[in-house]
Image (cartoon, rainbow, N blue to C red; front, side, top):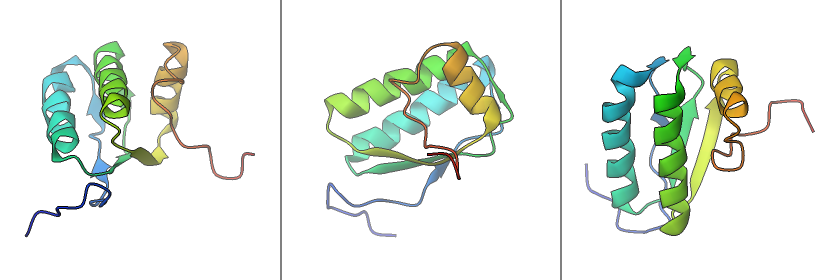
Length: 105
């Protein structure tokens, strides 16, 4: 497949793994850095996340910070309740801007 050259082009959503604990953090970091280095808008799908810990949330927070600094748009197409709880418990809502729940204003 040809690489899209437009900085605003959006690729298919990047689906996060179900298990985002410390063992998955290095691979998560590598995947997110590769997406960020592509320079295109990024869509993340966190609907499958069943387990998450502080290490993975730190990776997501750093990625979100770096994406903002690089003016790369990051949109979430979904987030599991587990992911939402982890983000909220660690107070990372301002950095990791998860989508609003369906039906919630």
